[in-house]
Length: 122
Image (cartoon, rainbow, N blue to C red; front, side, top):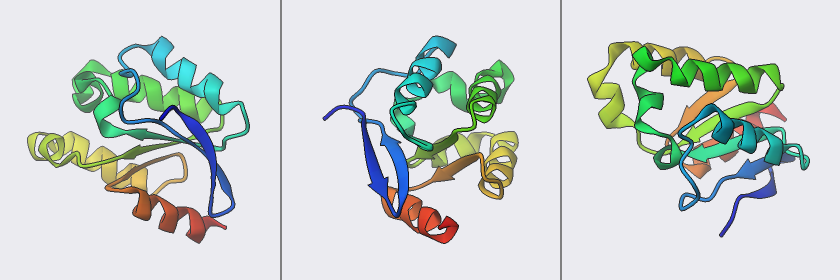
């Protein structure tokens, strides 16, 4: 499978392949943003595709990536189990909590939860 744009609940979503390349640099994030311009409003990235630095807020990598998505008016959704990262960082827990209350960046455990949130938007 490759990254593909799918209609999910009336919203065009770039569903990123879990086996795809790691998002380890800002250029990798910009490449995903570029792929989204094929018509997607949301970019859904499996947590395992994100470099470990994304979950270590002191690196500022997550903030930089999240800001790029906001600047390009795209929603970023991180899909998957990030519990080990959450257990290790109260700052990350706070970021995830606040992000999930907004419209720009979501952290969801699975595709079903993504679909439910998208349907609630429509």
